[in-house]
Amino acid sequence: MDLLKLAALDEEDLSIISAHLQDAVLKTGELSFLSREKRFAAMVRRFAWEKERTGFRLFRREPHERRLSALSFDRVLAVRSAGIDMNKPDEVLALLALRFLPGEAPSGTIELAFSGGATIHLDVECIEARLGDLGAAWETPVRPRHSA
Image 1 (cartoon, rainbow, N blue to C red):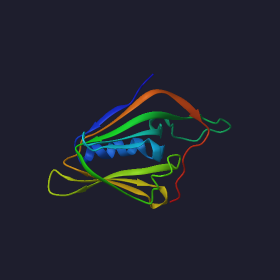
Image 2: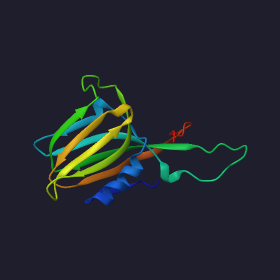
Image 3: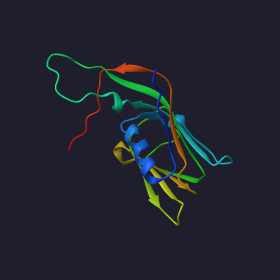
Image 4: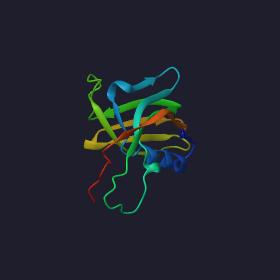
């Protein structure tokens, strides 16, 4: 089993984690901000884009994978959200991208952008993020699609 483990300490690293998290799904009840530890964490079910094959396959349907993964950010000073009802723990969110909005170096805001315009903003001292798979993959028949 090939488990993904990534760390981000700058904007370029964060963009790599973002690419691996595109189309990840999670529930609002799986979001957590531990203010004393300055940590924000989430359990996500990421689509394994790195396993996707390119090219046309006639009459053969390739299986797709999702993996349970832990995403965490350290040195988080504050968390704000918009378009998310935290009182609905089973509400499903689809993550589109992570972005870094620089402040006074090295601080800034990490934005988690979700479908439907929902966002979470993490005010951070600096970029310090981790993404790690927690176990085996499972097959999914659906490959996320995006309109151009």
